[in-house]
Image (tube, helix red, strand yellow):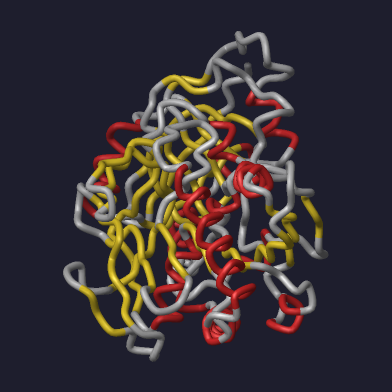
Length: 383
């Protein structure tokens, strides 16, 4: 492993010198931290991290290498990667190559040998901020020039990034076992594990580009609609809100996760807002108010729904009664919504959680039950 110089620069002027890792050059983005101690391959290939430089709080990264079974998408999506101690060589029977090789192959400018605890403390107190990693020739740039480039990076607020990570044309994942029918999935940054869970519940999964129209959805004659996770600001996704409102008006069953939860919130008439530092990692505690159980969840979001936490409330957009179904036990952020008069619900976290934990996979069963109940009601002629 080479030890070329690299530097991480934050918009507040903080600088951290380390060693170049992965590709060399310059990368700019929103700097966030992830608290997951395992699952770095799933994190790197999660499209929700597009536009972000990820700092891993776990100190030792790369020891299990990389393989062709665990990627959540077709490539690494983080804009940069920051670790303290990269593994000198992978050691796992499933590993086919090193993490460093994949970072270099996908052009991900990264840095190692820095104090990730100190970086995390800054982000934890000041909130996420813009930053840049400079290595190779870029490491020799004047410090003032590096800081200027960092501060010229657009804020994440107001950015619509789903088109950058979505499929360009429809793909189909066959149902496993007896089919319930076609499920329209709007790919806002969907993970492969999500598709596998949906197919395992009997859905013939039709993955549509983020640009799909409501007419594209209805042309499939689907039994339900699903919105995936994804990057960006939900306030910049008016198209997806309008599509979802059309679906809710026709009582098409809906399930949304992460970004999909924020979009359901907007469709129901609530606002969204940017969190100070967001929730990222695989150890976020959430209370399911329906069962009273606490789930340890995998999360990656920097925005949240602004809705009253207590009691049943009226949808400001006219879709009947709504309740907040899940809340964060760390900071009381809304972690789930359930519509009581239309067949729709959502959660702010990732129930597929390929790297674990698996507390929340029951939500896919809850979605299947919602759809089968709707199909039964339709066959009886109920509304």
